[in-house]
Image (cartoon, rainbow, N blue to C red):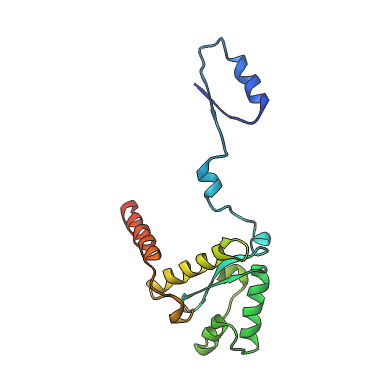
Amino acid sequence: MAKFTYIDKETKFISKLFKDSPIKITFTTRNTIKRLLSPKPHPIQEQFDSSGVYQLFCPDCHRKYVGQTGGSFRVRFSEHFRDYKYNNNKSKFAQHLLDNKHSIGPIEDIMKVIYKTNKGKLMDTMERYYIYKETYVNNQINEKNTAKPNVIFETLIHENTSRARTTE
């Protein structure tokens, strides 16, 4: 049996060559649902040029801040950095670092892009979910009243926790 990734008519042409041989031809595709829904790796220089939901990690205590931006992640990081540098209380993340005398690191070390999307309900929901998730494990920097009880989020967290235990 021979397996070919289906590309175009060239693949059909090659398979016809084996028509009278004992070799059976099968086709695969790279365009699977799993591949389409899986997060795609982004080059470092490009990963911070989109909008969506992000996490900032405190380099000293490893607690997390979850936020969203309709602009680029890079610009939003620079706003947090500026608030830290000039001791402004606009950013909860910068305020945490300043109040606890923690350091700040470069964008590549302390920012993680969680979900790329444009402004709207999906972005709001994703941000709320990740804040809730970090609140659940008492590891978030966001305001405590940001995470309101949510049965759906609770179910997702328990489901993911159960799956993690069964795969270990």
